[in-house]
Amino acid sequence: MRVLAIDIGSSSTRTALFNQQGRLVPGTTAQRKYSLRYTADGGAELSPVALQRAVRACFRETLQSSPTILAVAGSAFGEPHGQTTTQHIVHDAVEKFSALLA
Image (tube, rainbow, N blue to C red):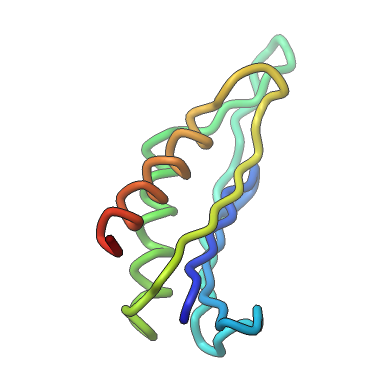
């Protein structure tokens, strides 16, 4: 069994595959960095397009090594009140991969 893990953070997206013992499968890690844009009022923004590109690129790179997965796990940074765009992207990715595995 292989689990695809995705971590969407404020500075990068990372993906990797783990085996049934929870160990990293060598050669399956991918990372794409990006920058936040800071607003005059102290806010921080990340382009949804840049984020989506990073997620797709990481998926492609990780799955080249081992395209067969049995589960998907995701984490994302977010605001304490409500879901962010990042959380929606993780949720959508997990749903799409889960549907493929059913």
